[in-house]
Length: 407
Image (tube, rainbow, N blue to C red; front, side, top):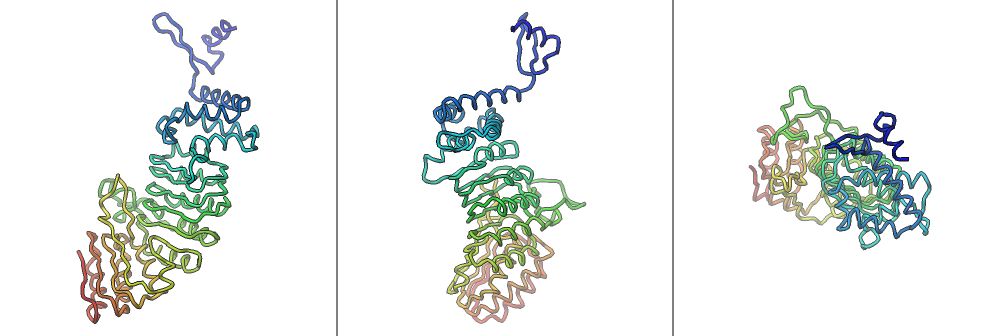
């Protein structure tokens, strides 16, 4: 009887509930929100078993009637969704069609069966809500695109290790804070998930950012969390694992790691992987397939400004390592008809220690491109006098070069 429960609560002998008195009235509540969320998830599962997909549809109208983004906006449902999936999975609960109830709920909430493009796309994702998203797509058999943008760190993206989406073709993790350990998690997913992944996008992360240097300046607008201005040590172990996973993957066609401030040493690693993967069509914006066939007369990489962000996001620029990658590819596949090479507003000297070596290689490629008429290196980044000198020595005897843009 409730009177007995009331007495136990007031004596502190039923810790799942607590109470307080206000204006002479006793108010009882769960001592922690998790109890309430668990009981809600359990009740939702019970109703799902009784009423099937009809209840799942009703629950969707309660949780996110206007679209999946409400799951993020209305955060109080997130823990309940996660618990529902876990309870349904552990109980082996299935729909009349034989699909796991947890998977059915996720696909319903994401409207995957209502649209031709089976996409799960969220912005404003962080380490607090990514687990909810992952639980909704955990074993989806129809999802082909997953795009998560926001502030996901290496810790948050570790949840991808258990993801088993057998139809996933495109994984976009742009503009997050994924570092070397996060790369390890993505590599593990590529190796073990069985997904027929064709495209991987990690633009605008921190995949080679190691620990801060002892003399690193404090974080600021001019010194953000991107390893920018050599504030951090470089760490390549995550990148190496990621490239190894992609190299072994039979369906990978496109990957993009621009906007990551890759060091010079990353360039040869990227080139080795790309040259050993004949199925790749494009890497970091570089048209690999077209370069191999030759006939290209112009290569243009242009950002408005690497320091200007759109909606707080860094543009897709080539850093020192990305430019080194491009040059390694051009050495492997010389373009005899190349007349223009534009690398405007790229972070060519983001790895200051590698700038001279990069510009020396750039000079050799331009010197060997006998039909080159235009070289555009405009941008704010000061590559240093020595880098300019080694480039100039290669350019001064070029017979066809008509225009060189710097500064």
